[in-house]
Length: 317
Length: 308
Image (cartoon, rainbow over all chains, first blue to last red; front, side, top):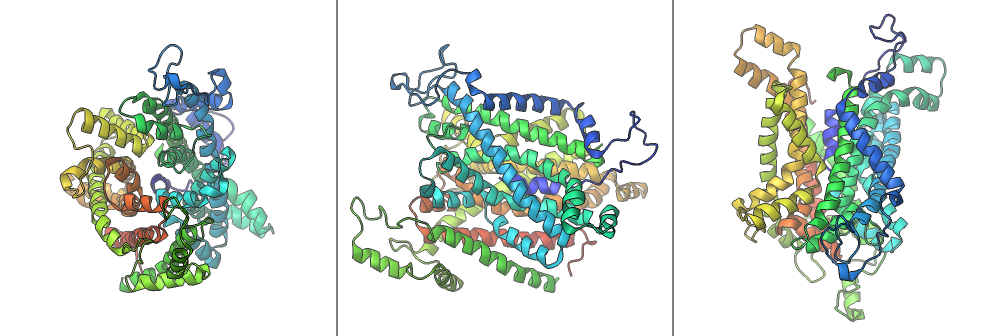
């Protein structure tokens, strides 16, 4: 939510590491590129290993929920409503008698899919507009930047509430529709940050010698952008994306908690927390379990983002 | 300086128009009947609908509606709700509470975040540094509404240290706990931002020069290091005030604070478009002006930055 600005300001554009420098004092014979250098550095960080293990586990849960539970998450037995945790259902039952553990497992898929797609859409829109604005500069840059300011000026939660409540009736009760409107509205409010990061990286790269050389050889603007600028500007945006992914998962939960994000036929941690608040005083476990899943997931992505940023930023070494 | 501010103010105009128009279209061009459910169980009488459509210019096209709204806005008229309440008065009732909450949150995040950031930035490594890093990670990962519920349940209901909800008068003492909840996320960012900034600048040439000149550590830290490290933090704090007001919806909902967040959320649910646009317009103005203030502050903090 508020982290876009924080990450954007904390994250400087990464300078290019020259791959052809002779006699580089590395342990390997072959000089490494920035990416493989960062990868080499990453593998030795405990923070990265912990978060990678957590994320792998979550991805497996999201891909194959059947492996972890054989209970249908949408089947409710009212006679078991709000039963405490027992060997049958280790997280207990919710207010409608549905198995909380099964719902938390199945909820992982939607929460992660929403986070990943919203991030991908943000990068796609913001990244391409930022690249174009930074590359061409001048009038195109001013127009695109002011356009981004319009969306940036809207507070995230408030803007999302307005968009979601406007289109709520349009999508109806279809789970795919409900999920995609949440994804699109979060991306619509999030892309300006990516654009700013990409734009400043593109402005820094525009006058580098390799771009001039390619231009001098007669490369078209399209080729310059895609083959030369993009690989060199991608690092800061990818670092931001990792942290933003965690933030989007949290934002989805916040919107669902307010009752305007995802809703019933869809199972996500946010929906579960939202349903839990009515019986919070009598059955706090209903909040605790999905909340714990949510916190661990967001934590894993934020830690991964931290580790990746440190690895890609030679200044921090 | 004066010319710069003027030019920036002029640049704000298209952004302001764009944002407010966007909100206006989203709120008013909703597919669906704005009068559904307004008159209880039966459909609204035709005469009422006709009068309301006329009063809110709903039959004009969206551009002319927006221009009329903007015209009223410039004379300070926020319009009235469907039930005839002045939106300006509703906002005037709710706004002071939200401003006090946001300012308190800003103060909390600035004091705690800066203190933690400066301390850990100067003494990297060690137990306290790791403690701050881990706790900021945790604060970032926990959504605000979970923090809010935990604070309300434990501090308020179980242990009775704070009042679990805020009364309508909203005295400062009752706002402290909600302000902590609202500030928790940004506090973590401020701490990390300050830490990175200080750690980076600590090794800068000008700091070494200042130390070599024999200045006292207090002066090196206070005048040379802090002032130069302040820019990213000031940027964050400035833009955060707007975000805090917008983000107060969740906190205000949990602690039952009668502020702008509750007003606008209720208005969205009941489709009171005039109230929604009014509040968003105000929030956007605050946000844009804070951005301008931050940019002007840059030049004060770092004389190398020339505004003109």
